[in-house]
Each structure stands twice: as C-alpha cells, then as structure tokens.
Amino acid sequence: MIEPQDKVVVGLSGGKDSLCLTFILSLLQKYSHLKFELAALTIHPGWEVDNRPLFEFCRQLDIPLWEERTEIAQIVFQARKEKNPCALCSKLRRGALVKRAQRQGFHKLALGHHGDDAVETLLLNSTLGGRLSSFSPVIVYPDSGITVIRPLIYLREKTIVSLSKRENLPVQASPCSLDKKTKRQDMKVLLEEMEKAVPGCTAHLITALKSQWLQG
Ligand SMILES: Nc1ncnc2c1ncn2[C@@H]1O[C@H](COP(=O)(O)OP(=O)(O)OP(=O)(O)O)[C@@H](O)[C@H]1O
Image (cartoon, rainbow, N blue to C red; front, side):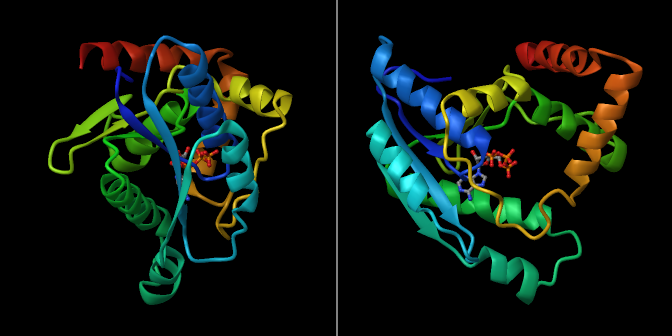
C-alpha cells in the first residue's frame, strides 16, 4: 500500500481507528526502511468540535495536522434534512478529504477501516442493498490522482481497542447526534448475535473477503 517516496495523508477523525492508524504509520515512518512523507488531515464538520487534543497528538508524533473546515453538518441536517444522513455525510467528508489532500500535493489517503468494518459493510450492502460487496483495501481514483488505502484492513477491532488503551491514545467522543443509532450499528449488533450462534464467523467472513481482495 505504501511505496518509497509516497506522500501519505491520514484521515484523522479522533476516533480510536484513525488514531491507531496515525500512530502505527508514524512508527513505520520512523523505524522502518520505508521512506515516505506522512501528514494527518481532520475534517471539521461544522458542529462543536475541539480538535486541540488531535493537534497535540500529532505534535508529539512530529507529523503535521491540517484541519479542513466544512459546513457538512449544516448541509446534511438543516439544508437537506436528510432522513438517512450517513451516506451523504460520508460522501461530503470523502470529497473534502480528497480535495484538501490534492491541495497539499499528497496522493495517498489512508483511512482507518479495519476487518470488522469490512464485514459490517458486507452485511450492510448485502442485506439492505442486495449487493455482495464490501470496500477494498486499495482503490485508485485516476480522475483525482488520489489512491485510497486502508492499512488496518487485516486487523481486528479488538486489537485496535487494546492498542488504543495501551498507548493511551486521546480518543474523542463522536460529535454526531446519530452516533450508535445508524444502520451500521444495527449490523454490529447483528454480527454480535451471529458470533453467539456461530463463534468465529467474523474471522471467516474476513478470510472470505481477503480471498476476493487477492483476486481483484
Ligand atoms: N472528520 C474526519 N476527518 C478526517 N478523517 C475522517 C473523519 N471522519 C472519518 N474519517 C476517516 O474515515 C475513516 C472511516 O470513518 P468512520 O466514520 O467509519 O469512522 P470509524 O470507523 O468510527 O473510525 P474512527 O474510529 O477513526 O473514527 C476513519 O477511520 C478516518 O480515517
């Protein structure tokens, strides 16, 4: 996913996943043979958010953090009054990430999705959308010149939780009023129920996705 001389910017939300990703990539940059540029970018959605802990975190890691101010909250909740706002919010956020990455001259955008996220997306797409698909570890967008990478895709969420606790990462509570009330949260609950009935099924679903990714 990362090659010598790459310019990689991490989408940093302040949640445990992207904090772990930023932390891991900064270690990779400092202690491996791989020479690449690393920065972080946080999208300010336009509601009350205090990003000072993120600036301090990045300062300690010695990587630049850029903040992109947007009006996503206003667009999604007031102007459009979306009934199902998550899709639009995520689309606008991705657009803001890509534009700012381009402006900074960075061509790889790293996101904090992990294996459990990939399975939840598979369940979302298949049970609600009728599509047997999830996201991919690497997606090249030729028009924008940006490649999206998901370096944590082979990690389980429980590993990320324990790393974020062990390293005392400054995890921020989600500012979204719909946090834990989304369709994705329903899939999380469904997956927990499936695990009770078929222990280990999440790991098997990740293996199934891996073989698809390796073919594709
Ligand atoms: N406000 C934001 N600014 C920058 N990047 C973001 C932002 N929100 C999400 N991202 C990026 O998109 C990824 C997936 O976002 P999602 O909303 O699904 O968060 P998540 O699975 O709860 O992850 P996290 O724990 O990092 O918030 C995040 O891991 C992060 O890399």
